[in-house]
Image 1: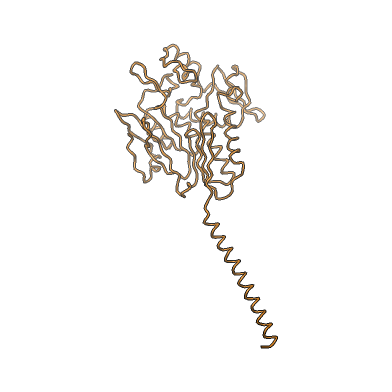
Image 2: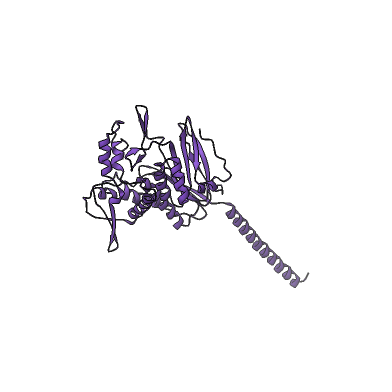
Length: 361
């Protein structure tokens, strides 16, 4: 074998080794790529206590979430709490409640948004949602001060009725500032909408961070989007108003908000009569119908929260009729004899999907 032949063989060997090494690099890179694809999304769970209740957030993240996401969520909830908590003496709502008639308060956009949603539902419900109902709630013993389950007198009810009315809350805009005042003494309580609004703000925060698959729940009010960790629509249970924990219906949702209002945990009985914490702002008295809970599905949790409260004041037929007129998905559980019966609006029917109605015990 000549020297030239040996050199050719050596050169060929080096080329083959280089080709083998390059192919190995490609193979390892392809395997690594496959491994990355199969790794799946990260499941992030964040929970805590805010606004006098608990909150839970579940995120199915296909990309890294901000390292301070939990802090951002907490700050968002704090923002709503500092604006609309009646238990904070320096909150916006407490400042408004302390105003004299005719005085004006500059309010934040968050406060204004909740007021506008509340006013819309107040108008469309015929006044069954009224955020000034506090004096009536107090005299019936469902406020912050316990009154000993005493039925108030007719005169006390009439005095309280004279001190409520959302029509006395006046909103004006001056130099791009939103101003709020009242034309007679009253106080606001936006708790029927504030929790739902907080849920919406957290959901918006997640979407702004490119995290579109989530479940956000604050005090039982919930909003979902996308798919759950199993890659399926989120499954949300409507609770049965029974003494034992039971489920009345399961919803499969890829987008939307769910809120439930019920009277089966907060009431008292006197001389054989049951008095619910659900006060009708029009009569000044607890509701006497058989409705035990109302569940509403809406695009936003603030709307679902507000409508669940408003429709809870009505009887089943009234609530379903209004929901059909306004195309609101509503599911109602009512007491009947020793058990319960269910009814729902036309737009709720598609949400039942393949789920059969579960018999409410």
